[in-house]
Structures are given as C-alpha cells and as structure tokens.
Length: 388
Image (cartoon, rainbow, N blue to C red; front, top):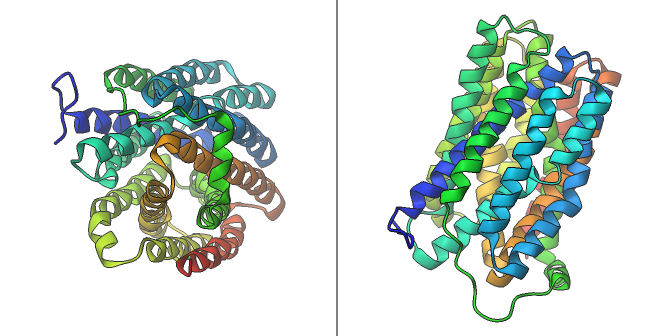
C-alpha cells in the first residue's frame, strides 16, 4: 500500500473519502425523489428541479477541472467543492416549494458534481505515481458507503412510518456532506505532473480524439436513461410497498456493483475494455426492460442486481479509457469534461424526460420501458468504439 508524505496509508484515506461521499449519494438517489413527492411535487416539478442542478453543473465542473489543472492542485479544488456542496445541502432543509428546491439544486449543481471527477483525478494520479491498489478496488468503498445508507436509511424511514416529506431526508443528506468535508482535509496533494501548467483553452484539444467523442456520446445517452434510476423509490411506492424495499433494492444493486468493481482488474485482463463497455450497456437495457414489467418486492429487488453492470462495469471501463487517452497534465479537465457531458448534459435531459414521462404515461413502469429502447444507442456507439 502506498504511503503519503505524513506516513499514513494513502489508500485508506481515499477509501474513507469515497465511503463518506457516497453515503450521501445513498440517501439522495433512493429517497430524495420520494421526499419531493411527499411534499406534493408532481413529476414535472421534480424533473425540472433535478434538471436545474444538472444544467448548472455543465459549465461548473469543466471550470473546476480546468482550474485544478491550471493550478496543479486537484486536492485543493476538491476541498472547496466539498465545502460548497455542504453549504448548499443545508439550504435543502429549508426549501419546501418547487421554486425553492429548484434554486437550491441549482446552487448545489455548482459544487457537488465536481467532487467525483476531482477525487477520481487525485486517485488516478496518486496510483500512477505510487502504485498500489487498482482504481476500481479503491472506488468500491464508495459503493459500500452507498449500501450502508441506502439500506440503513430505508429502515429508518420505515420505522418513522414513511412520513410524507420527512425532514430526516435533507438532514441526513447534509450530515453526509459534513463528514466528507472533514475527511477531505486528510487527503494529500495529488502528484503534480512536470512541465508548464496547461492553459484553460487547451482542454479543447481533447475533443479531437474520435475515441473520446464516442465515449462521451455513449456516456451522455446512458446517463439520460439512468436518470430513471431515481424513479425506483417512486415505482416501489406506486406498488404499495415500503421504503424498506427501496433501500433493499438499492443496497442489493450496489452490492453487485462492489463485486464487479472488485473483479474488474481480472475482467480487464481477459476482455478488451471496449467490450466490457458494450456489455454494460446491453445489461442496462435488459435491466430497464425487466423493471418495466416486474411487480412485487422480490422481483424489484432482484433486478437491481444488474446495477453491477449499469454502473460498476460502465464506470470502471470508462475511467480506464480516460486514464489511457487523457494526458496527465489535463487529467482533471478530462475527468470533469466526461462528468459534464455525461452526467450533467445527459442527466439533465434524462431527469426532464423522466419527470415528463411519469406524468404523461401514468407511472414509472412505462418510463423504464422507453429507457430500455434508448439504451440501445450507447450500445451501438460502444460497438463502434470497439472498431477504433
């Protein structure tokens, strides 16, 4: 295991940060949409509010990455982004109307979406310099944090009788950011590549790589379909089931993600990374199709096991491609560009369409059916990438 300049295990500091940050994600994804439904928001209002955060994150994360590369300080940028996310998450506690929630998520979009690409930058650069564990096996601790809160918080909400608009949701979400804001202070500075610092405009050179453009396109459409992931809690409630089922489904899905991330170094030695990416998209299409046709707690929870390919395999393969194609001096720019195009642009479109579809088609199940068909687009792009 690599050791940082203060003599403490670097790998465990990174694992701790991933765990704490994704503990907050494990509260937001399963329970924030049902929380907004409990406040009386319809699908259109929920989609608009979530889209606002994604729209704000597009320029924000790119600027965070370019600034980190320009200053040669991704760790410092990560600390500022995490603290900004903490402040904006506190605002959500007081936001109770569609307008207020939209503004709060818009503000959070300026900070929170930059956290993952920045910590990924710190991790990849540190591992390239010091060696040690693979990225996937460090990142899986984020998945463990997600499992802990998705399952545990679901049980808590059930014990609280699944109150509509339960303030425990925004309180727990802000608390997770508080812990990660403390943990970020223990991360060491990432190794700084030699040579002159890149100019902000140099990030455009990345877009000349046809392989990267195909990856960005596939990731954006994939992110649009995975926006309906947040409707899982609504789908569960539409079938008259409790938050325990939501938590169990999310926890089981991310447990599968952990297994895939742990196995990724072995899979990578046996298959081309582009092949693994195509498998991730094919498995995701099947997942959305199965969800659109399933009823009952056992079926809904079991299908969530495909999250191992929807996110775990997809994310590990995509980060490996970025690691190979993006030069070290533009690492943060490349990571944040990927996040901006995929999660921000793709996510914004997906959130809006998912909310619109929920209202117009009478529930979450038809939205998942459409997502299954749209997921064939990134599958086709991944097959093109295999030929590059």
